[in-house]
Image (cartoon, rainbow, N blue to C red; front, side, top):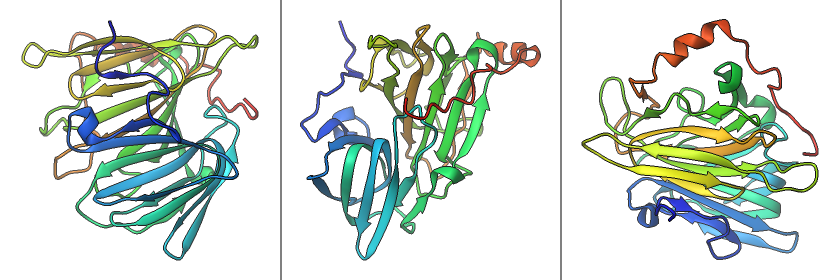
Length: 288
C-alpha cells in the first residue's frame, strides 16, 4: 500500500509529468511542476502569488517574461553537473520554450524580488557528509546563497550505495533552532549500463505528538511529500546514483533552513570526522 505522500512518476497530465500545488499537497506554501517540451511546443504560465525557480533537468531552452529573455543552457541529465536557473517573482506572465524536461520550483510569496538568471558556472557545489554518507549539493536557490522571499531549493546527488538526508532531521516548527518548512523531494535515478531501471528508498517518520509513516521505493520521476516529521535516509541502491530536487517553503517570517537531527542518531555526525569524502564526488558525468 503506497502512502498518499508518495506521488508516482507521470501521474500528471502532459506536458506535466509532476504537478504538486499547495492545494493538492494539503499544505499552504510549496509547489513543484515538471514539464516536458519539444522543439515545437512552449508553455505559457503566470506566477500569480508564487515566486518560481526554473531549471532544466535535461535539455535546454529559454524563459521569456515581459521584455526579458533568459537562456537555460542545455545539460545532458541531472548527473551532468549544475544547471542554469531562472528566478521569477510574483505577478509575472512567462513562457518556457525549448526541448527537454524542466522543473518549476515554487513557493507562495508576499514580497517581489527581481527576475534574474544564475549561470551553472556560478552555482555553489557543496560536498556534504563523508564515507557512505557522502553526497553532492548544488546550492542554486538556498537561503544565504540566493535572495528570495520564501522559496528554498537545491539539488542533491547521492552516489550508488550511499545514504543521504542522514541522520534523519526535521524542520516543522518555528523555534530558535528550527524552521517550519514544507518539503518536496523529486527523484531521478541513473540506470544501469544495460538499460536497467535504478531505484532507491526514502523514509519519513514522525514524533509521538505528530505521527507520520512513509517508506517508499523511488524511481525516476517519483515524488515524496514531507509535510512534517523526520525525513531520511534517502538511500541509493548500489550501482544506481540517486538525484533529488528539494523544494521548501514555510509560513514563518524568516527564510532559513534550520534543522534538528533525530536525537537518537545525531551522534553519527561526530563519527564522520575520521572518514574521507567518497572519491566519486564531485560527480559530473557529461553525456550521462
